[in-house]
Amino acid sequence: MPDTTARSSPSPPSPERRFLEITAAGRRYVSDSGFFAARPHLEEIAGRALSRAEDEPVGFLDVRGSSLLRITVESAVGPPRTVRLEAEPATPPFGLTGRELQVATCMAGGLTTPEIAGALGCSRRTAATHTEHVLAKSGLRSRAAVATMITALRAHTLPAPTDDLVLPPALAELLKAPVWNVPTRTGPERQPITVGLVYPAGSSAGVTDQRPMRQGALLALRELEERGLAGRAVRYTAVEATADRLAHAVGALAEAGANAVLLGNFRGAAVPSAVARAAAPGTPVLHSMIAPALAAAVDRDPHTLSHVFQACADENAYLYGFLRTLRVLEASQAWRPRARRLALLLRRSTFDDVFVDGLARAVERAGWDLALVERVDEQHTAWEAVTQRLERADPAAVFLSVLPEHALRDFLTTTVALRTRTLVHTAWAPTAPGFTERLGKLSQGLVWSTIVGVHDTPQAAAFAQRYRASYGGDPGLGAAAVHYDLVHALAAAWASVDRPWNHRAVQQHLRTVPYRGVAGVCSFAGPGQRGLAYPDDTHDPSTAHPHLAYRITGDRHHLLPG
Image (cartoon, rainbow, N blue to C red; front, side, top):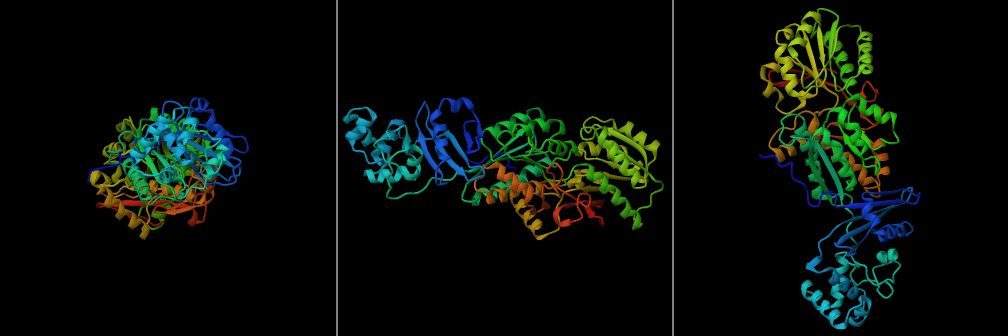
């Protein structure tokens, strides 16, 4: 089945959609300061909304300037009370011109043709012609019908004379105008929930973990798009970015008013500056990357990075799980080490000297000697030379940190002889769909683990069925489910708060209320707002992801005892 993940839903977040937020505490954030500086009347309207008694959304059209804008104003009770005004280009209903929309607003407001002429500074004949055009283009026959249409479409258009014009109550309250109780009043649609997805370039066609991540997130968003959420439409846009364009992509989505941004797996060095681009509006950024420095940065600077949430524990947890797996294999006599020597191959992009020293101490505390510790470049390592050093060190087991599949294949190819006597453990990459088929005999006997993965539950089976129906393939053992869960964790937060753009409330929900999904519990309760690992972070398995270890035999992944 062809991959359709590049599709975006109608009206995704874009630079043309601007927003302004102000709070009763004096906070002010604008996505485009020049845009709002040229339209001071919009900030004045937002300021009035702070003192409104009602929280009902208000929508209207604005013909000031060269383009027609759709304006939506919503309030959140807080604390502190917050108003968000959004402005985006609009298409005029029924092909009406800006002047005809103003005339239709006057008709809906009860003005006669002479009064419309006086209000708009034109002749009675011109006003009558505009009135005829409004009726002809809309197909309506009366002013009352025009009033109903204008209200239903949220098409009251400004500027319009406010001394004599009467408007719907909520709009009139913002504009300090007389109030008209319209005959058939339907409130404006709530602002849609918008989500931005940023995945590495090539992820829409790749066969490893990036593609399932993207597809899992899109499956969840399409489910929400079909049914809506808390009375709001759900929209999304999926983009691809290289590491050097990641910050631009995140910043563009946050500035366009996205209610959250999900990230695929990018190299750690590109991520901190990218997520910081969403700090000013507070847009939640969710990801499943595991470089220890990412959660550590959030932990060090919670004020700036309080909007960043990591689905799982960091890569340190893989080594602790590896040491436990060795104990289990020894205790069950499924493996008998010929010596007490271990080798650690740690990816350079993840582990600096501080983290390496910590892992070395953990190995020694577990009763093992370190025969070799080496940092490797997952993109350009000379594996033949590494294999020679492993042969000389002669460890009983090798811990290989998370590598992209092509690098793991290269390593396994050069260590065929070594692996006849040495246990090799790797992480995460085998969760990708079709791993054993692609690697064939190279994967046989490999021990691997994941710190967040799919459990054998009815919920996981139902998810896999929906995934296959959408994409024609298996979701694998981790990536698709994790990103599917991240979307639904956000949905649970949005459903619990008064407004999806009330980022502070959404953040508070994410960090305090666990979400239980296809891949288990997602809690964000660990240091740096990362997921908890069981039993390293907590002894309560109901609040954390367990370390899942497998051994590949035949073409199957066999779960090892925990």
